[in-house]
Length: 104
Image 1: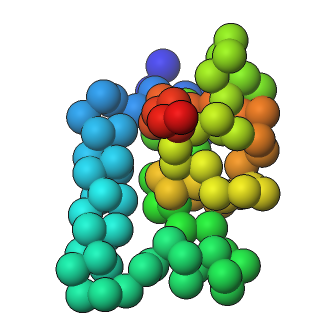
Image 2: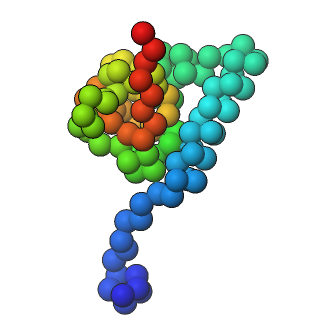
C-alpha cells in the first residue's frame, strides 16, 4: 500500500552508505577545524550544544547498551550527554553504530 492510499509512511532504515556519509561529514568538519586552528567540538560543547550532526535514526541510536558497548566507553562520547557524531543529546548507557571503544 502506498503513502497516498492510507496516508501513513513507513519509517525507513538508513542505508550503510548514508551512515558512512554522515560519519565522513562529521570527520571532515572536525579535520577542517583543526587545520584552521578552531576546535568546533570544544566550542560547541562549551556553548551547551552537542556537536554531532548525524541523525540518531541514521546511526540506529538506542538509549540502552549493546552488551558492553555503550556511549560512556566510546571515543566519540563527550560527557555528560553529547557525541561527536550523533545529533542531539545522548545517554551514557546508549549505543549506536558509530561506537568506537576508547583506547586505554
